[in-house]
Amino acid sequence: MTYSVKEVFLTLQGEGGQAGRAAIFCRFTGCNLWSGREADRATAICQFCDTDFIGTDGDGGGKFPTADDLAAHINALWPQSDIDHKLVVFTGGEPLLQLDDTLIQAMHQAGFKIAVESNGTVQAPEGIDWLCISPKAGGELVQTQGTELKLVYPQSGIDPASLETLDFQQFWLQPMDGPNQADNLQAAIRYCLKHPKWGLSLQTHKLTGIP
Ligand SMILES: C[S@@+](CC[C@H](N)C(=O)[O-])C[C@H]1O[C@@H](n2cnc3c(N)ncnc32)[C@H](O)[C@@H]1O
Ligand SMILES: Nc1nc2[nH]cc(C(=O)O)c2c(=O)[nH]1
Ligand code: SF4
Ligand SMILES: [Mg+2]
Image 1 (tube, rainbow, N blue to C red):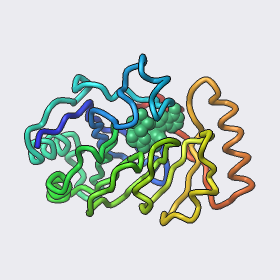
Image 2 (image 1 turned 180 degrees about the vertical axis):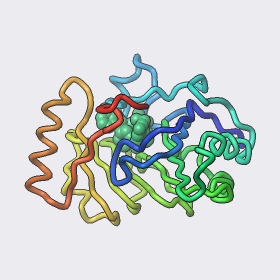
Image 3 (image 1 turned 45 degrees about the vertical axis):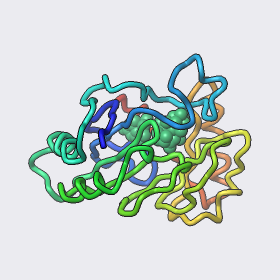
Image 4 (image 1 turned 180 degrees about the horizontal axis):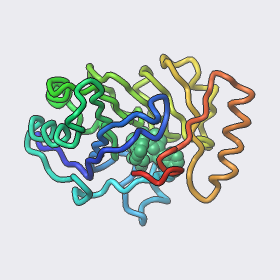
């Protein structure tokens, strides 16, 4: 299958339990909860998205006819001096609309651990090494198991307590970025102090000014 990719870049994972680790980010085009057009935001299922995932015109983006083509493109951006810590993060958009067994196999063949950032509305294939699920109010949660659950907070319609019994190793609250970012940060801190199952996930790439 042909993969549509907005951008591919080397950066440090900014969020969640792997924050600070070098990784190749592969951002797939398209999402099932928003068209990506500002005109549609107010009527979208997910209205707070901080990401441009339209088209294939970003740095390192494009259309890749085969999994081996995309794997080679990702591999070429990894520092040549390292073979032991190869990490790719598939994100988007919604990566599980495109990530398939063939691409998972190709990335493992190239020596990568595979992390995924998903909204949880699509069942994940086998073989993902680090699965981050970030539920969205209004999006049906079908993937209820994974490595970390990262809830953008606050979201009207989702109480963190309603997610606590799901099968994840780590639980994070990530303050919603946008006009109320400062208040959202304080609310997330207060929640974590009262409910220690939850940790605070800051979007550290925004603090440091890296992609
Ligand atoms: C752009 S999404 C792409 C992956 C997938 N569609 C998802 O929603 O998980 C990447 C991460 O950014 C988070 N995110 C998106 N908009 C945000 C915002 N305004 N503030 C904080 N986190 C946000 C998402 O919840 C998700 O964890
Ligand atoms: N540095 C960095 N870390 C991230 N973690 C999740 C991101 C995403 O957009 O999925 C992201 C991103 O866009 N940049
Ligand atoms: S589900 Fe993820 S990519 Fe889609 S609009 Fe929401 S935050 Fe953005
Ligand atoms: Mg991002």
